[in-house]
Length: 247
Image (cartoon, rainbow, N blue to C red; front, side, top):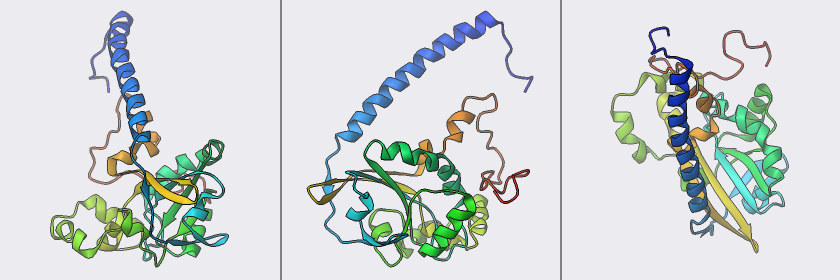
């Protein structure tokens, strides 16, 4: 740490002002991108989907719960998993608290996974979350929206060298590598207008990084993300050393 460049307060202020100008440019560009997202064409959803929820079987339109906008996080929790993906779980610690604020702006938020509902709700209780969670077990929903891969799609990845972090995450979910990577995280946005559901936006991979609120915070400390180790560092919040027992 002490090997880093050291300067005077005046030097720091001058460098900080230069950086601030670029940060403001980025903020303005992010505002432009947000507008461009809203201007994307809407795609009507013509296929029927059904989901198991705490309130019984629901259609996609019924998941809106009386609001006109729906955000779906495709949480990695496959039928063979014994626990949800640790990375998805780290994001859930952030958006769990955002749900009431989204509801206040006419947005319903829900997670959807292919595991049976009983597994999902049991894991949610363990992690002390409260967001809605629905099971798409037996539905094409995850496949159609890019959150579950077919054997054919997975073949090139499985035939190559599997990164050790992937094997570590698979083991943390109580499954093997193939079943783990069959699932993938994604975010899908929908609108409901005159009884018709439309897809309005979607993202995955690093496009989901904004949902991991600890990363922007780590980007602002001296060591940054500090992810040089081969072992993947993210854990469920009740698995870190010193975590409160029973959290």
